[in-house]
Length: 223
Image (cartoon, rainbow, N blue to C red):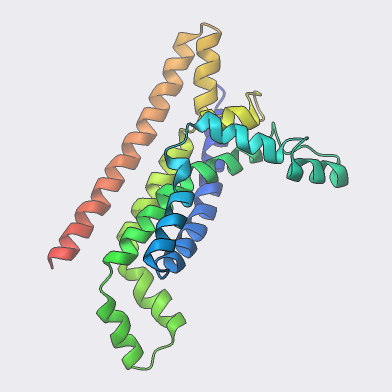
């Protein structure tokens, strides 16, 4: 059994999750400070990928980073390399698909944080940087970890957008999701079932971890 699809899926999901983690926190932190009307508009824009079909997202990505797209054409003109049909094109797709999950989870955690702790830190003369990294983020830790788990699990199972921008090439762009589809097309149900069970096992572990963090967060709020 070739384990490349698992390795490729994990490296794509991990890379995308790391990027989504920092961008999601940054956007959630600063957008939460905006006026209510503007915040509502920005929220709609940033969470739009959450309700859009993945194939539509993939279509827009292709029109942007494809050889005929503005970004893809520019990169091809200076390097002679195409972004599409590569494993790192899938990273772009997974970032866009999973960003709303991290953003919404982070924003909810930030809004639920006890602001009195921030005011107390300011009263003690602590810098805003110190308060953010040593008080604010640790206080929102469980919610942020939940966002990371959700983003990773979603990215690991992404098919629609990634299949459009990366396709299926064994040993190069194949992921768990695209391998299942390819095995089904070839009539190789036995191998398709193996990859389905691999994905189910990882998803189950992710959901168990998510439930643990949610229970711990609820216990912390009760205390």
